[in-house]
Length: 335
Ligand code: ATP
Ligand code: LTN
Image (tube, rainbow, N blue to C red; front, side, top):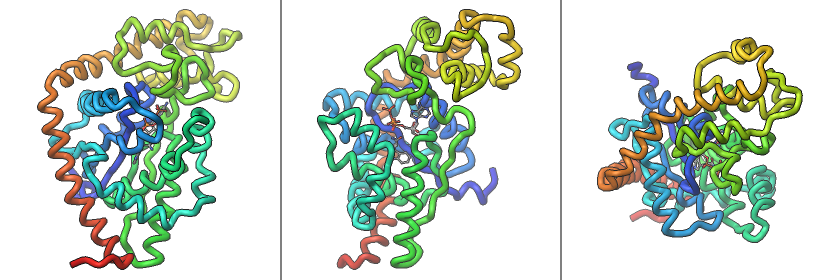
């Protein structure tokens, strides 16, 4: 292993607000696993973020443990990467408060995720939903992260994080590392199977819209069979005009490694029926080992708790150091 890259830090997180989808695997988890041998990695279950939408407490607790199990099932090694629950590291909420006093109201008003989520939940547009990106900036800056592997939808939040780090560094003195986003070219935005112009989401009420990482092979094949495409029966990659087909081609590429040109050749002269069946089977084969692993890991709750307890301790040591520096710089008395 290269020692210069080894010291570089990665931080990323996923909210435990539902069962993770194949979008999370393609956009985030896959990169988390690929990067973990070359970087010091912190992978977090963002439960503080998830209460910006109402959660059922017992379900939130259950999902938190399930999300940890999925991280491990996807290939995160808890021996080398630090895996923790955000609410167990109080420094996140503490730094978020300080950073919020350096964040403009106008800056937050421009965040597209805030606009999307407040349109989806007009009954609960809370202040936490608005300041959500500041908490995300705190998550990242506490660990002095160099790289943040996320899906394409988080680009804007990363840009805000960079601005806040630079602003604080400029106002006081060098305090935070300015992080870079790490976003894959292919797979960073997997679309809904039912409405291929919107992102696949774990909280979509239409169960056929998302492939969950716990879905059986049969369910996966059936969901892909029912996926919305178009009427011209041509298998061709064209995101703007053929979003449904392009999304399925992306999944097929991720599952088989075949390029878009190879996929177009493979299905030349064939119809959507053949294509969807092939995609369904290959995606099912891709997910199956992860899913089986997940159910196995989930049986040992004690081990999961131990991993998360240790992870929170490790994370706190690093987070406290950064927060102490920040508190000193802003002028809080330290005895
Ligand atoms: P939801 O699925 O409930 O809409 P979310 O995207 O708001 O969730 P998280 O679950 O915290 O929030 O997302 C965690 C990570 O997974 C982020 O890096 C995000 O970009 C990525 N991700 C989520 N959905 C997709 C998707 N459909 N395609 C690619 N990446 C995704
Ligand atoms: N906001 C992210 C989840 C998240 C995150 C983070 C991602 C919370 N904190 C820190 C990367 C780094 C989302 O995908 N909705």
